[in-house]
Length: 371
Image (cartoon, rainbow, N blue to C red; front, top):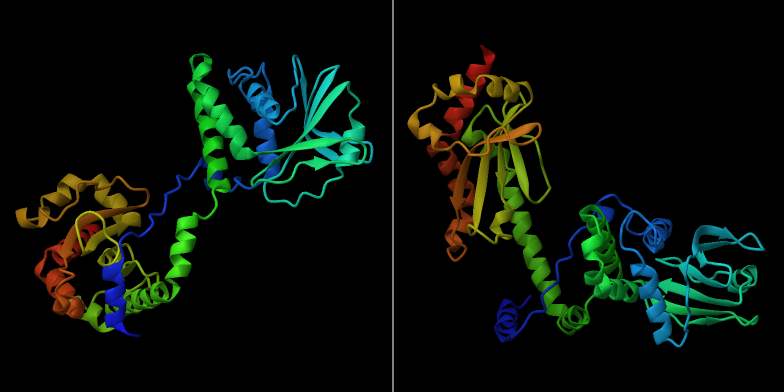
């Protein structure tokens, strides 16, 4: 690997494409973001003009406007909504919006292949006026069947874009809860629909060799740091009462006391992944289990055992987390421009911990909770 050439390439870079951060939705968190049935259920809810959501005809008017743009002029009033409508051949239409005269036959796709029996769908709905809609993530040719059927392709994103453009006309009558539901659904569609950005693809493949070399260098740096802090010798130099309890996650390591409920949590991924507070190592004195419960009950009494200097290490967020607490904190700032500091991480951490009051506080917690 030619480091000099790599450095020259980095210096020539004028612009690195920025990745757009996608906000997770409740559907993402619950694992439901990719299910067609879930999307169809939500569409059915919002297509209901009389629904409790209060958006009235927002969805149906948006859909009809898009169909009009594609040459399909349709009027649909006082319609019923059917989910999984059974066809003549036993198939299932995702969504059927229909009244006595008119029908909109909707097939909603997320990731599944478009291989439905659209002729059967068309034959199964007998109306004076009808149109099919194929909702997809990506652009897809509209489908024309041999029996005169026509399924117009509209992407989920285009439908949602149209909905969002019309929302200001409806907001005053809508409950905040349903506004949030709709916002979450819209964001889910954007998250699932958004392809890999063209600029990112172009940038990577135009600079693949250099980027892969940089990735290799980073992996070596991470491996070096992990090995430094998962060294049993370092732990014993800090305190013979500690042992390593969490390994190889490339972010942090636990140095636990024998009880298992008091430990030092060493966060080291801030050495290569920092935004605020700079390049650093954060070390927390963490308390869990019955030891934490006992401290909670008698915290004021325990605090009297600490010196003024020891109290300076206590975090302001004590007892605010579920099941554990970062009770005290030590920050070790690292100058990334100083190679000797990076090469001497083990020694720097050992000296910082020993010269701090974290071990004193840990000993006092252990003694106090034995009483």
